[in-house]
Length: 153
Image (cartoon, rainbow, N blue to C red; front, side, top):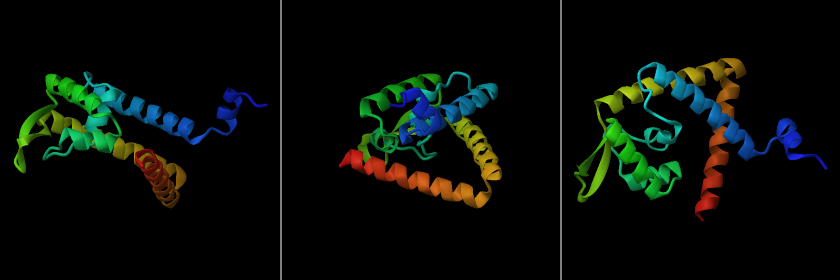
């Protein structure tokens, strides 16, 4: 029988591969964000920052998009609000609801993060070839979407 370490070295499963990619991308992204002055952010904040829209989004939608529990998102929004990246505003569509909106600092982080992620994508597209990278990303998105549907059913 092959040990888990050997298995994960030679033929890792989807979870291991996805985790390796996630952690490597997060490490590069947050290291570069820190160098640009956003050194108070942590990878856990990505559950909000990756999905926030410039016009704001409800916390329940952030939870759904990120796959995190609503309570986790609430705690992260509290942290990001205290750090000055987001603020809660009344939702014009439903005054009882709140939108999580980026502040000027949040918008600056979104621009910086977008540039960094574009650079990461471009590097991999050059390495694999643009068509292979697009096909890889499409297949990866399909698998992730299908897996999330199974989880939510």
